[in-house]
Length: 154
Image 1 (cartoon, helix red, strand yellow):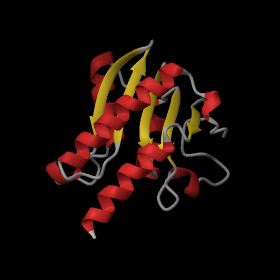
Image 2 (spheres, one colour):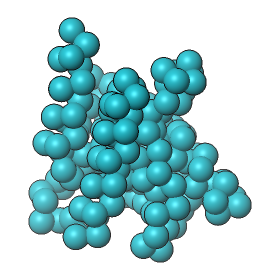
Image 3 (cartoon, rainbow, N blue to C red):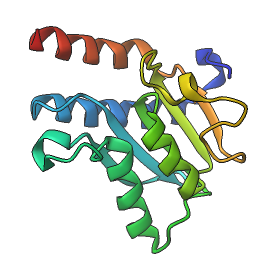
């Protein structure tokens, strides 16, 4: 997986910036600051952030909320022509959900060294074999949001 910024387009940066705005919204709600945006044909079809605390639901991650919203918008369960922009590398649960949506591409910001799906990938990836995954876009900004949030909690 190549993470150099030169491999990302201006459009990628614009959409990841929107995901960061969602993460900031989550932080303001005292949620872990992770944001997600789903894009189809250059248009945002879903925006979401973590809602685990508000909904009292550990499955209410930003990606899960975005997948549900995007599927509803498209009127179908497959997101194979879509890109997910998310500020933190998806966890195994979200990677598994991404597998079932058949999302075309995942672009994430900060790597999650403890709970990111790539840490648990073995011979087979948790993502669908046709899903392209790229990390490191606006990683520093994403990581700073998380660091600031958890420092305030301690």
